[in-house]
Length: 483
Image 1 (tube, helix red, strand yellow):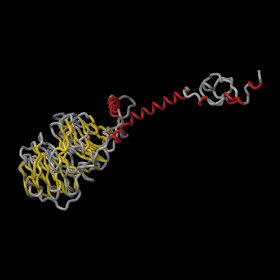
Image 2 (cartoon, one colour):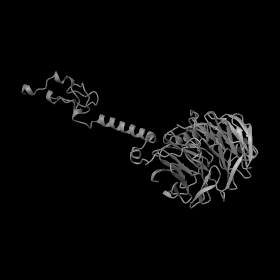
Image 3 (spheres, helix red, strand yellow):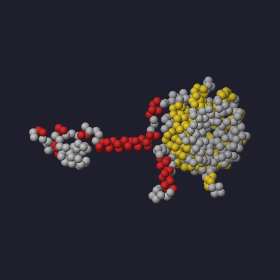
């Protein structure tokens, strides 16, 4: 054999296996990795086969493992990353907001978090009725107040009243009774109708600027944040619309119906359905972050404050971590875990509580042995929440204050009737009405009554406050201004 064709033994002392790519192998001997014979090649032919062979077995295995891990992580965490398509191509055309300015009350709950809290007031109502206006056939629409005008939904119409005198300024006919508040943002009133539509009414022309038809009747008050209108509809959905045009930006299906206004905080929307579920969605894209389940039901809104979401369900007040996020399948996994724990399977530890649960407030929660049922205080309305306390009434007649961070009761007050409407906190006082027709003002530090005002008919709609006056609607269809 010609000498130039003979392999150089020295150069072959550290060959690379052509089968698996393992380096440092001895030519002509079995590979220490794959046990196949390592070819003896001339120096010019010896180079890393991985440079010319991409589909080696080792690479395929590594790639498969990486793909599986990435798919698993995507399945776990895809709800936590915003949808780039919706962010880039589904943006609202305005930045309108219905959050109230100082001295105004331009949406249900006053602010986007629905706290019903005015930290400081220059004038505190003393319990004197300055005017009353008969709105006709009663509905459950609470008023809003902006720039000296009271806007209130009524029976097949929206009324605009002078806030100083109670005189009617104008009215707009709508094709359904209004049982919830309207919301004002910019020069538009946003109104949900039972004919399945959400409409925007131009305050100057008093005509519909746009109308959007949903899949069911609308029973919740709309909320406007960063140019997006959020409203629940009777087809078991939460809708997000462009406030400028009415274009649907996103729609998310839920289990029940959202019959009360959603809350908006820190880029997320919080909505409670009538089956006792609290949902958290990414505000811009509608991606679901959490579904918190309870065994009760609710027709009330959540309140977002102090890092918590407060909402009543089944007569109890729940506090949920506002930042909690649920991994897909986590709740179902815990249900199976709990079942094994209930069966006392050896070695199975106690399952953790539902993701996000912090505490439950229900001061009289007890088991009635005579009926075999649990009795609750009967907290059914959205609470008013401050940085230190929450305030809520009961349909059993009690009114309660609790620590907003721990849920510990601080005081209670017995009223003359059931409390079905949310209270309002103004500075150091809290105000609420009862179905016996009495409006109360209490010292919010200790629950001592400051004054009470009989209004002649049940108060089952939350009061609102603007420019030194309370505006209270009663069940006989009348609206009262109180200072």
